[in-house]
Image 1 (cartoon, rainbow, N blue to C red):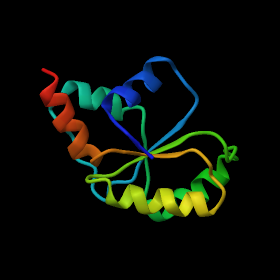
Image 2: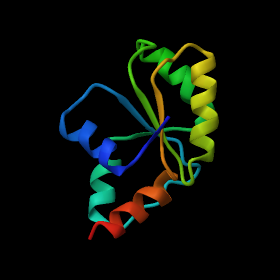
Image 3: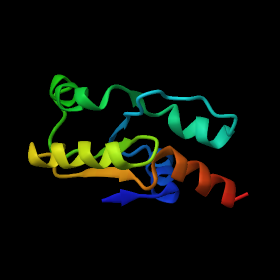
Image 4: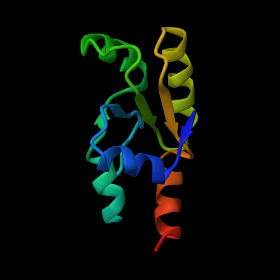
Amino acid sequence: MELGLFQLENLILTRSRFCFLDVRAKPELSSNRAFTEIMKHAETLAVADVPAHLNKLNLPKEQPVILVCETGKASQAAAQRLESLGYSNTYVVAGGTRGLLAELSSTK
């Protein structure tokens, strides 16, 4: 399932329990302050390390996991892998960080 900017901001603002993972191969900084504020809530790791990382955290398989990459493609693949491992609430940021930045620039 995909999440947009509005849903992600609401989860952060309401301090909901979720695991937010940035799986970009080369995370880049942005001059967009709102984007930086959102991304500071994400933990950065390699996409291949996601299942082992969640296992290490003893994350309940029903706890929401939100994945973001640059375009959404790597996140989608990782989400499918997690679902096959029994994680029932996996979400992908629509369009990845590019999508977030586009939504943020259109809301100005």
